[in-house]
Amino acid sequence: MNECRLCPRNCRVDRKEKTGYCGCTDEIKIAKYMLHFGEEPCISGKNGSGAIFFSGCSLRCVFCQNYPISHELKGETVNEDRLTEIMYELRDKGAHNINFVTGTHYADKIANVLKKHKKNLGIPIVYNCGGYENIETLKMLDGLVDIFLPDMKYYSTEMSAKYSGAQDYFEKALPALKEMIRQQPKAVFDDNCIIHSGVIVRHLVLPKGYHDSMKILDEIAAFPVRPLVSIMRQYTPCYNAYKYSEINRKLTTFEYEKVTEYCADLGLDGFMQEKGCENLDMTPDF
Image (cartoon, rainbow, N blue to C red; front, top):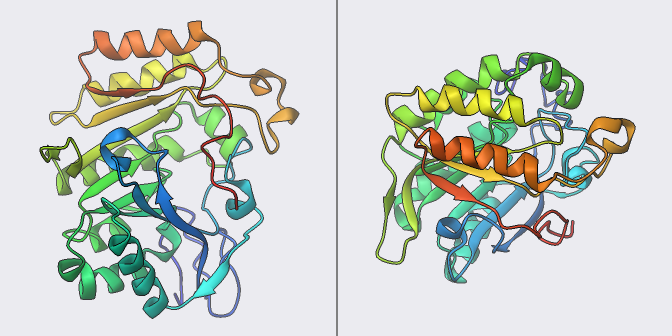
């Protein structure tokens, strides 16, 4: 933390003295924890995923559905002991897993907690992130994370710069995904179809963005070990999306089906969303 390089922004700031690009100090800040039923079926299952939503983010997505915590930094500070208590609370409520949502900027502290408690916790650990990761940070989590759940938002540098303030998004996200697959190459499910290990890559299809989506799928299909792919249709304009006319609307069925059909043609396996999810109903109230 004396020279923070946890994410690709590489701020190199002392977060004990000031905030990094993520907006956070060296203190853990949590906006919400809950049994979450809005993840992929193999993660949420019947009992829910034990989701812990961290405040702050290394991306600046103009359409972020979680903007109250990612941009506005709502939440409360906790120490590692309280984070540990929350994990056990969620487990004791029946959570299928512990789901760290956007925890990259606290990855060192998450690793510390997991080193002490993962074995005793007894349920899988999910690392749910925006895909914009440093390989060195991911290596700190090797052996501690069971399921990687990254986004793969963009192929285009123009789109990633315009909508998330990260021109180098794909440049960083692709090798990061390969590192996640190296750590957890095989998707393993129990008898109830709950995932216990593996990688699920999420991709949110954007209005007028299906050509970019196809390029991402081409890259994933070329991997020697293919992860599962979750194609999301839940885009709805919120936060600052209204400033960009091309994305200030919901996705069309044509756009979404172009991507899912292409995914199937490539032989990729995974998940798709039904029509009707393109709203904020599944977004937690922060």
